[in-house]
Length: 165
Image (cartoon, rainbow, N blue to C red; front, side, top):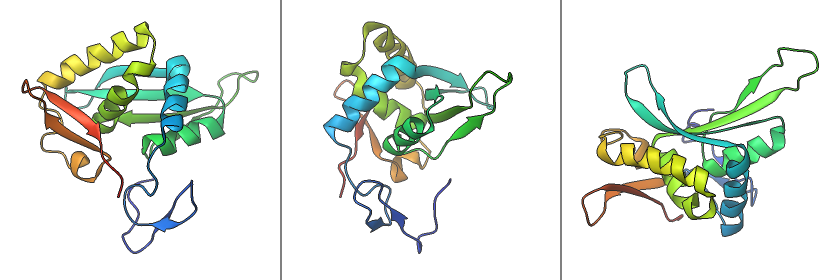
């Protein structure tokens, strides 16, 4: 689920063509709206504490429909897909995908306007912490990821979705 070797291409889930970069096809407005609606109902936006006592932006989606979680994982561009087995016989298997760091921040900024007030409040809390932190300034996530981090006209950190090649 990590990076594949450079000599072995990935297969695009949209056009079925092989590609070697981070993503083949651009994410459509329809997919962004679909993801926003899904995360509005089933998502979780927060700061999570890592082993090094730093807080990281986090988007999590957990539900019992594997195909829906898999599609969200592909759109988010993350490699994390976990399966939780039920604790009781009448419970279903749950599937989870998580986006962290720059990817999470970029998606939060992308879907912000499509979300309700409660979710926007959660995102504002995460982004206010992220803007004053030094998270990701030395990480390769911005170099190889789909989002570009930059300082805005007021000197605050911001992120934008990279244009696809």
